[in-house]
Length: 444
Image (spheres, rainbow, N blue to C red):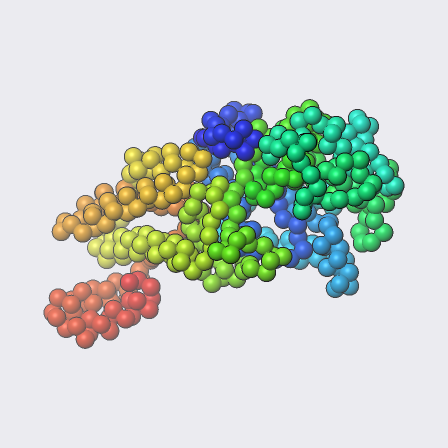
């Protein structure tokens, strides 16, 4: 397996910490609203990475968190007159519904911030004791100047960084880039700490959860969207380096953003569609096929043109597979389990090359061409048909695309036979009636 490492800016041979095993953590959502379709991209990308690694023989432990305490959650709870827990539970369920509807392999652990509070407070206290964090009137800030490696992940020098749009400015900080580990608050949910009542800052949560779920605190893969690289992942890595003496993960993997032609897709810009609505309208197979159609590290344009192109591609595959299923049942052929290993290995090699899905799709269509050629011969070679049919099925499984098999009843078979008979007799009016029935049942 080769992966592009955002830390080194190179595609590297993947070498796990423990042979045959993969530890992977992906930053999860802040649960104050529904997930939009752009939020579905990391869900699909990292599930596909897991599927690829498992197909290569690795055992994967996959963890992703829920941030269930945040200003947005607190404000929504106050606005609705309910508890933060009620808001969080509502949108965790909604997110899990989206995740499950996308054919995701169930994650191993999905920790919540509110269930990790003792460990977070202890971790922050260690940073204070080590001199990497300081307390100001009940708030705790991480000192970026205390970490000589700060800026390595985002490849920026500390001197060149300034308080940009995503960096909170605060007169109490020693440096504008210092970030909050603990926030004193008198509004909403809060916890007791050595520094007074408050709640944790966003950047500390994942470091602590990784340490809790993976024990060593060092994992193989840390993933998320490119928008998390700075400052979120940079700040995570800095805390890990200062407290634990290592950079948290050996491979940092970031997916590109889903965009409209007008630019970035985000809730704040109001240019999103809820993932649940898109999946309900188009189904999980098409959504996954579309989201994987471009290189995962690149931005992907979401519009009617690109979505319809994905739909056309997937329809070609579904049509061919259905044709095999219908013809084999009509002729009483039982397909073997054999598969075209050469094509499957070619596909897997492309997926193992930093999830090169565009090239992997080309292998699927090459195999589809072989399948269609076999079906068009006068005397169908059902061994070859089965091999290519099964190979495509195995490829689609790695992509998380599961096309429902067509199963004919005796009545369906008889209708199909009569349709062919009517065509042979040039009774096209009767043939059209049978054809309409077969189409209504989704057989044609």
